[in-house]
Image (cartoon, rainbow, N blue to C red):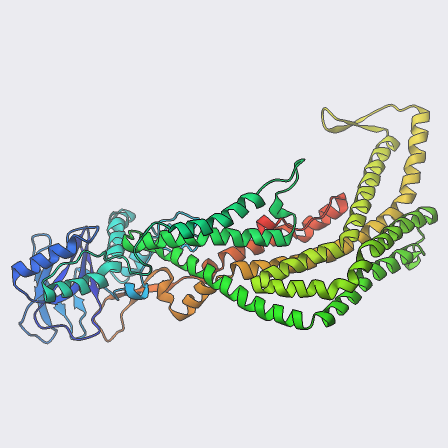
Length: 588
């Protein structure tokens, strides 16, 4: 039965008379280092000292490369199963044997945070995933690829049998670079040190959080408890009343997260048995730091511009608000009251509805907008000053300002929606009377019913009345529904901008293009060049961009589901209130 031989790539020439050191796994022989031949007792002692820092099988001598020369290379022999195996090492350092599947790997450098994983790195630290376990079918596909061209057929049972060995081999390959350095150091210094081979010192050694840091963390924790308090009478959470308060909640959560995450990372630096999990937390930690830093940098630039030009922007915003939230709705209401497009609405009802909404707009204009217009430059200056807390704080204040400027349109939309829904319900009920039907509440169906002549006459008269009044209500309902759609679109644009600044994976994207080996997306086995002996090359696959932007893909899915045209049309026809998506759904 053939085995898999994992052999490290040799960027330099193989040392003279090297000793092969590695591990023996079921179905796999893993070479992790080629060291110079030493005295047997000294080499055994060095291997024992290194092995004490490894979680896995025993580190042992696999064999030695002989000195007899040949055209093909040198003869290698060891007895893994009691039978001697002869290998040939080419001048390029590639071993070959008829019954061995040779796989050349590049030892990942832990000092550069390189490592291999059978499945893509999970950047969502809230998901507990084992990155040493491949997704279904991936390991079998790798095995089949490694055996391409082999005339012997192997079934699923063979692949499942060595699957555990393959996972263990990947774990040991991740430690092979450190094992080689440590073994070389032990042989040179004859000393001993007991640092872990699986981790790199990214943070100082683990220590409990200092009292000062704990006191600082108590402030955001207090804010989180306060903002997650529900308002009385079954109201919403305090953090959901405005975009600004919600953004304060986001920053408080991040402020409480960073110290604990720093403590977790410093703990994992000294004993990291799960490399992928530690790297995910490391990337998430620095992504959060980068986002906050860039948010403050862009916010300061945005705030300085806004503060210097607050008069210009304030007067421009005042003209826009006066035009689009007061004058344009008033003009449209007067147009609807004057036979719009040749459509003759009910004169009395149209005049009543138009006058009521015009009075609402005029009242809001006099009470809110006109007193606010002279102070808009000051309001924008405050928004600019908030930019020193980040661009997101300024955008949140702008979102709340938009809610204030369009509050009267929202009230008018609610009134129009209730009127439309009530009239549609009345039309349905009277139409059933007109047809001699009634609703069976118990069976949830329509049953025939014998109405008296007076009941039929009254139902017919009322049905006719509501049928002729319905187009008038429908016209005003469609106008305010359209205005609601426009406001929701602006809110969605601001919310998307907030989500971009709060959760854009900037650090992960930088690593993806600068050093893909730090973000493994699986492994692949490539064929060797024709000029070399037949073997496979184990290579890292960069993580797919979809895995990096998993939060944004989920956000797009939620937005497309919430703002689906079919869903909006269904709500529009049913007379249901159309609301923007809840903030907690687009927060992560």
